[in-house]
Amino acid sequence: MVNNPVAFLVEIFAKKECAKMTSDGLGFSLVGRIGLFFVVDGELMLHICDISDGERNGDFINFLDSHDAVWQREYYAKYQVDFDYFP
Image 1 (cartoon, rainbow, N blue to C red):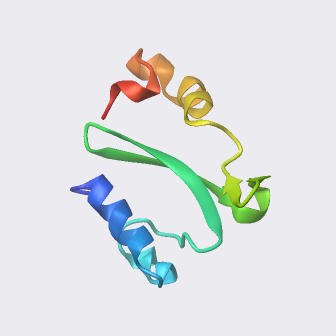
Image 2 (image 1 turned 135 degrees about the vertical axis):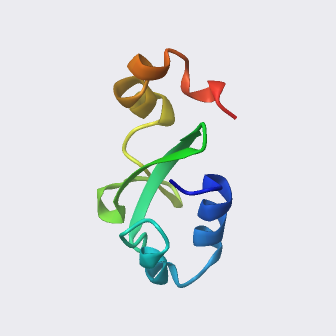
């Protein structure tokens, strides 16, 4: 578990050398990937895919599923609240 998951993600995405982040707790590179994440009780729950699998929307490439769709499928049964319950 990462001590401060939000600060950890901010640090990752602020660096241009994302490939170097593989040794900082993720165990894989974020280069060429997109995704979404949740933080619940200090636990980082990261969902990623290759950028080529994303959905193009104008100038953006989005993750294939919405936060709500991922939450409903993966976490709702455990937490019994909507994804935006947690700050």
